[in-house]
Image (tube, rainbow, N blue to C red; front, side):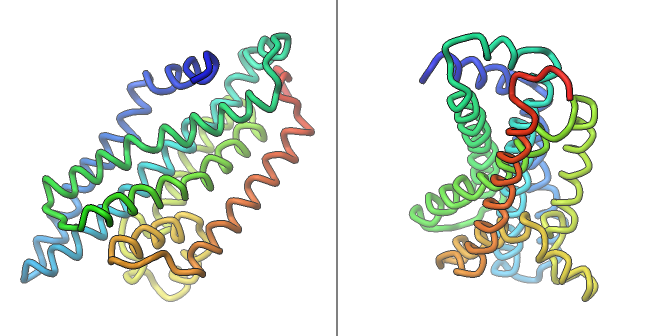
Length: 248
């Protein structure tokens, strides 16, 4: 672990608001939503299906929030002059970017693990050990799409605008992507719209694994396409707005 990586990880990880919204809140939602919807099921099998589906949705919700929240701080670092200070050190810009990506990816893991533990020990979701490992692994790997999106926002917008954008974008991705309620309950046009959300494909990938299978080829391809688009746009914007710039 490099000093820069350890420093950046501590900066974000010690933020209590960040931990609440990306770890504690999804865990609470997992229990609350499962008890409400699952309680209406007439049998144990129905409750299990609901509990597993809600758990995966909340794992995805927490992970995308963590990825976005950890990476849009690029805009704050530009405004504070921190990136300009890094510019005059021997640390290459490529390493600064790599650290941002690594921190964003690593900070999605606590929420994934906590929500999975809540699903297992509070809501009684029963999955084989291999499925649990695959579920966390797949969602952890898939979170790179939102790391790229967060970097795109962080490089594109100034400090205050980025802070507001992250809140609005999180709500849109969760609501329209079917993380707060099943897409099957949406009106027809809204179901079509959901498939244009990266969050929809991200959660679908987890549901495929939780059901005991592998992610569908279409699901993986769709999320990979979103990731590629976000990454290309982020690199394009970063080249036009150098990392050492203090203001746009």
